[in-house]
Image: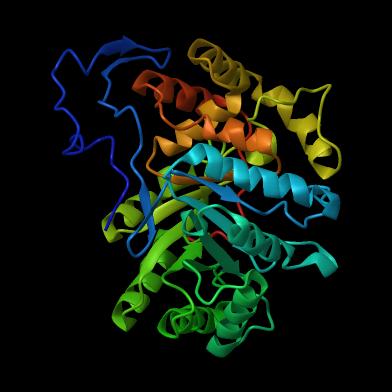
Length: 372
């Protein structure tokens, strides 16, 4: 199993051993104390999402593809989406990149549009095998049996024109709102693996307790459980506090972090006088004034490093050993996001950002389906 390197542990075997003064330094921060900062590698290792499949710590999400309500999608954007995926392949070299989608992505009649587009772009790419695909099955109230989830997976494969997918995931746990549906969900994903529809299974929005339960169930059944998605950003650090990242490390599960920029709030692209259209604009007008200290710190670090605020915010997530999925809507966004790779925030910068975020009066709202 390939797991993210833990900054609190010793350096990876392939890395030079640190010396006391060369790779550790004392630094006084505005957090009221002095501390010995840990050794950090300059880059993050690839992560496992399926058997013999390692991917970059940066992945891409397709939530916006087909979403007219929140993201203003229309079919004229398809060429831009296609070019963005091609740009990742062109600039990514020999790296595998993970693409996350879901059978519920797409508004109304466009439901499933994201899967259809991703399947098309993968087939058209210069190296389809380097486009590693994971979809999430929605836990709709009508899906009451294991067979219903298996059928949903088959429908997803048909939309993507695939015989087998790298990873199939539960979009959320039914434990909070429809607990009677949870056994069918677990059985359904196991059936997808056992029938050869998926090379591995994963979870989304499972807290540490529920994650242990489903992992035990799948292990006893011989099903490979490789990932767990959680909302993760400087404004959503619950995974660091709840223990879910610790459970992932203990059980060889790769944590996947979604919404690292909080819908774009941490991208540095918006101000109180310049907000996006639609529902996001209303939210941004309320929150941006309260985020000035954190946005200011992101801008300062970005300027010093020749990076963007987005790249700094994403790199913070990667520094925690998480596979981060970001939006991909056009080639320029893809290029900007790829700029978070190949370097690493210093320990001092990580601590500074976390200290500022901890003092903010607002935090990201947690997903209603997030379990304990």
